Image 1 (spheres, rainbow, N blue to C red):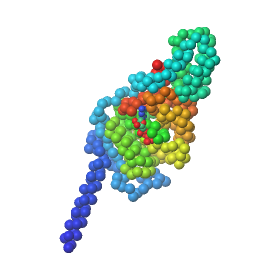
Image 2 (image 1 turned 120 degrees about the vertical axis):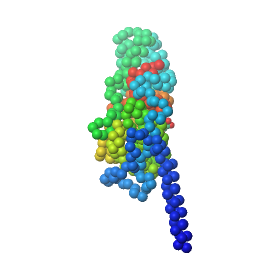
Image 3 (image 1 turned 90 degrees about the vertical axis):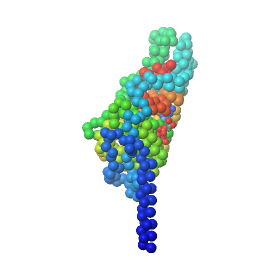
Image 4 (image 1 turned 30 degrees about the vertical axis):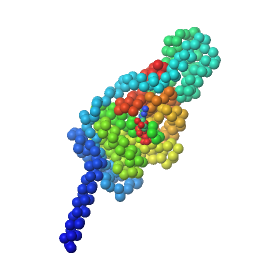
Length: 386
Ligand SMILES: Nc1nc2c(ncn2[C@@H]2O[C@H](COP(=O)(O)OP(=O)(O)OP(=O)(O)O)[C@@H](O)[C@H]2O)c(=O)[nH]1
Ligand SMILES: [Mg+2]
């Protein structure tokens, strides 16, 4: 009888050990393929920041478990350099803006524009989501320029319009991204925005671009709202060759995961830590407060160098409302305008910059790995004018 009990206990133990290994193997893809120069770090053991609620009943694996992506060398093809990307992708913009530039130029090259003609021009600008004030300003300036200069041909009028648009978009705004390591800390980038705007994709695309420029990048999956969100970021990490700090527990404290990611970034001497957050409705006060908390918790150990608000360019005026509320919750340092490849309303660039007093730094121009470009006003205006 005693033998029988011992045998049963041994069999049960063997099953438990086997099962645990299976879970770990399945959940830690790419671990064996970690870059040789990066030490395999154990799951972060940092105590959660004081005052944070952390569920201790969760493991395995613990919140903040480290997952390794494949080395950058194994990533299918090298990323394109960031510089010049907008020019390369300008065809995407031109396609989506069809009509806007042509209509404007058609109107402007009419001989002797009357009041109605100018109104049509203003309406076209407003229709492209430029905002009423900038549209009125552009039309005012154009009218003066045309009156002072007398009747002008299409090319001259185009040049004037181009100049006015570039001025409105802001040729001299500082659009540089603060992504370089400083002191003994990595740069920290926090990606925020409402649901589905392109935060996770932007984290992946940006990581890839930075890795291409020689940075070491760590991704933090602080979207703990759905388990699939961390999986999605992990997939991006594997695609682009970045390691991901994530929790396997749905509903883990996002601030704790962000904290762990930055801590890991400090320990690994990473150049940049990019933290993805859950999409949140700007109308939900609790969720907006959580964003401030994530930022504050990170700031216990590092500076948050960029808070990038990801806006879907196709949402028009609603995007502006979102921007306003997000800016109240956290200090936005830059805007990522995504899906510019799918809208004829590129004027939102001007409107949102005015609204927040913060520049559009990056443009999303498609779903591909390299379809993220540093925003360049002149290239943008040239593309929309066709
Ligand atoms: N055409 C186009 N699609 C984009 C662009 N950026 C993102 N997308 C697509 O938009 C969808 C949502 O992107 P995600 O990155 O998952 O968005 P998210 O903000 O992380 O979404 P949540 O986490 O659910 O809030 C995906 O299908 C992306 O491929 C872009 O610049 N152009
Ligand atoms: Mg996401």
